[in-house]
Amino acid sequence: MTRNTYILTHPLTGNYGGLLQAYACYTTLNKCGVKAHIFHYQPNDIPTGIWPRVRRWLQHLKYCAGLSKNAHTLLRRLQIAGRFVKGMRFSPESRLADQGEQDSYVVGSDQVWRAIYCRMMKTPAYYFLDFATPEQRRKSIAYSASFGVDHWEGTPEETEECKRLLQEFKAVSVREHSGVDICREVFGVEAVQMPDPTLLLQKAEYDELIAREKTWTPEYPVLASYVLDENPEKLKQLQTYAQGLNVTLQHLLPHAGAAKRRDRFAHTVGQWLRLIRDAEYFITDSFHGCAFAIIFNKPFVCLGNEKRGSARFDSLLGTFGLKDRLAINPTPEQVRQILNTPVDWDKVNAIRRSEQERAFEFLRKNLE
Image 1 (cartoon, rainbow, N blue to C red):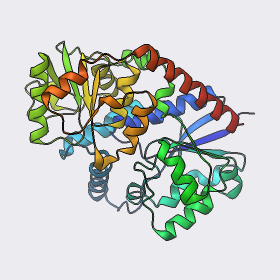
Image 2 (cartoon, rainbow, N blue to C red; image 1 turned 120 degrees about the vertical axis):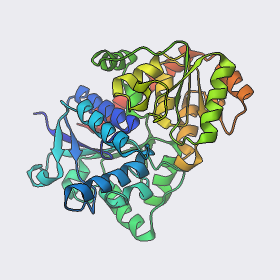
Image 3 (tube, one colour; image 1 turned 180 degrees about the horizontal axis):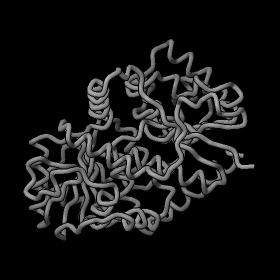
Image 4 (cartoon, rainbow, N blue to C red; image 1 turned 60 degrees about the vertical axis):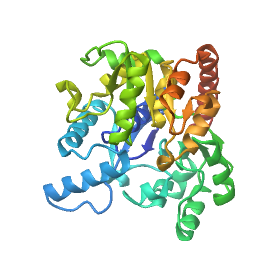
């Protein structure tokens, strides 16, 4: 009998990486023979009344996803997210009582164990399944859960509660190598490092996502840019990089003053993927931006992003032998040099296949 498994991750809003890692996890679990659901919940302190609720969601989106301050853009991205996840099975928080003792949870991926983010939505302990029964926790796992940084940000009280809960899990895996040390030293739990769910799907599966939407072709060749922490200085630098490479700069985030109308609005998930896949070069400060550069074998530069957690980049790029793609405040010459340095994609793809095999073995073993 196929039992239900509920994926606990951050709310699926307009963050492309968040949407795609949830989709990849959902797809992978179903491949492993379980009936996967996205566990859908509302953050705490959602007020009553339509406009207070909208304002609260906008605040949450701006904090957690680093999105545009333009309310129209945020609402459009919520609409895009809603369309993308249509067809996936969801289980609302209100139906907790309907879940049986034989059902289980998969916590992850993304920064589900970064305490400063968790407090914006629930409590850190919520993401360690404090609402589940002990029997359910003993059947549950963490898959590629991320602390975001190389240390635990919880208070002593939060630490004790989360430690107790995590020690009841059937198995624990984390996204970053540093997370293995955190689990051992802070929670007394032995964890293993596992790749982000997005890396478990094949390129052809993302091609299918692109093909199912109506997309447009950028003006080739392009330098695609997915920079979450944009500012006027960075925008000027990006334009300088593109000019030095003799290509067109194509932003993956909306810009109100963009010359082309289509660039003033948030892209669909399929269009976002296509702009990365078909770009000549790619530059990003996003973890999932780097992941998709690897998936699509794109020459890329990763801009260091301490605010969002550098441990994520160190682990991902280190796994694939691509740490030389990470740059902190690079000059245009350094960017050109990195982008024009060949990558042994055969070697990278071989590592990804090995990582996929390792991940599927972990999941099949612990989802029994």
